[in-house]
Image (cartoon, rainbow, N blue to C red; front, side, top):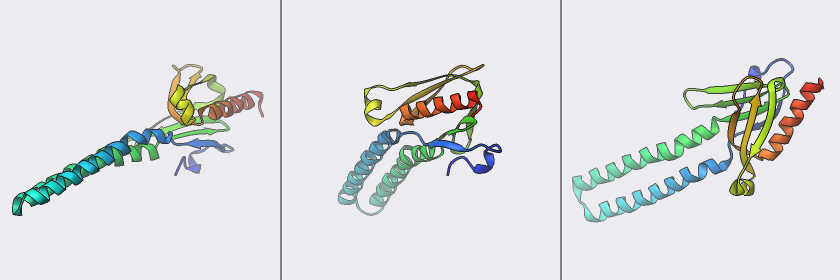
Length: 167
């Protein structure tokens, strides 16, 4: 899902729509794999070493802890990634994020003063980075983990120029 069409102004069209880069999900996936392996080992030990009620309690405890870790370290980051949107339209830049409580920023293209991008070596290899947008009256806003940040930078710059020239 993205930005609903009914949230766009009349004549506004989406130029670009992105979720954060997939690298945001690497650490949660690693934690999930490690937690699953650990839970498997602990469940195996409990099954081998314990009998009756003690085994049931131990396996239940391992399951509850694993479910909690899976929810916190995998499901929550996945939902956060899925509900974060960076959108460029022909009239504004839209940023929305949040799972339960949503928040967002809208920057009209005519108010944009400068557009910068930043990325280090690993970000360059993964084709991602941060986009910094400075508008007329606000502090610069930094949007992290934008996929293909150089392309987005160029596209946004072109849209701002087109808007300024009245195209």
